[in-house]
Length: 470
Image (cartoon, rainbow, N blue to C red; front, side):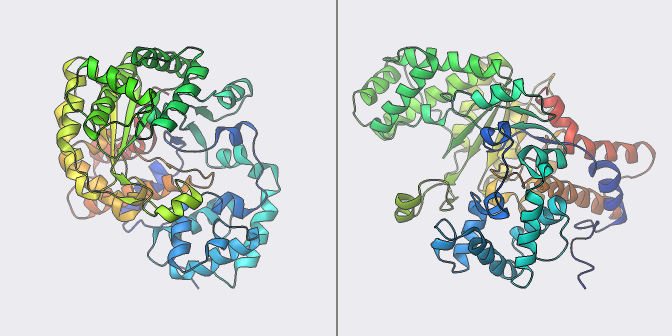
């Protein structure tokens, strides 16, 4: 009998940790301020045909694990049936011991479907049929799952050229969860391929209902779309970067670079980096004017497998951690905005754990009142959103900043079953604090006991509510 696996005290090693979690964290709503859910599926209250669509349809974490276990691509992204794909996932589960996917899989089964059995080849059919039976019920639709997990706010990730039609539809169709867009202008900086970039500029011009022939036109169109996003409740931007860009440039150099790309010419690396530097700065100024929070996810090395990229495209499980560094450029970027009075609330997410101390120490350079925690060290991201990565992020922030002002966890997911990531984080947080109490490193009497409970509640929920002005 698996009495010790994933009980109600899962990950909670001490009595104090259990008290902190069950009395202060467990019942709180979820604010998921960064994810990649499809707003159309929320607006249309999508019904899932099977657990395979819901669970395996776009989860490149699981795809990587299946490939590592020797599963043929036919059963991953190919034309195998839903049952065949699920069966391969069940066959892989016993090989996932100590991988976070083992925990996440069973947290999702238990919290969404009430299934306490371990998934393996022997239980696969029973679990598959039970999940599919439940998915036919209205409360297991896209919106139903968000209600089940008490999701209060969700911020999707949207391109400046997006119509936001589904966000508009949700504003007109009452739903307990607020679903807001997030400004993700990466394509406006992606000048590596002139032909692709010109096509994007055309789509942006169409969305903004204006002509774009010069760099000034580009900025005007982006301002129009920025205003449009604000009208639809946007409070955050997000940028996916290899590294930060803060090279010196002149207006003439940036205008010339834009003209060259629009004429079909490629730029040198130096020219491209000057252009990217100008764009990042302009985006920061826009966000500051609106009172938005800017987020930066940096350090990924993407599309490493060129053969599979040509077959499947991006975001299919062939990315990894990069080693670009870039502390100097990050500092210069933040410093220019701060010096000119244009530095908005900022969250920095590094993918390489070697950068933890770099980011956590960078925060203190640009903190300022009256906003507590104005510059944030983002939660463990992507390859780091597992137990060890979460603990390392929390510990580093605790040593070099104020953990008590941290805005907490997010899913960064395309799945409606990823909300237990918040529970996972909250349990780890409470366990770390509980261990400190048990070891005499933190007080737990009177005022301090109340304060520690409040700290757990703040990090799990209230800090984000206040920081983003939700």
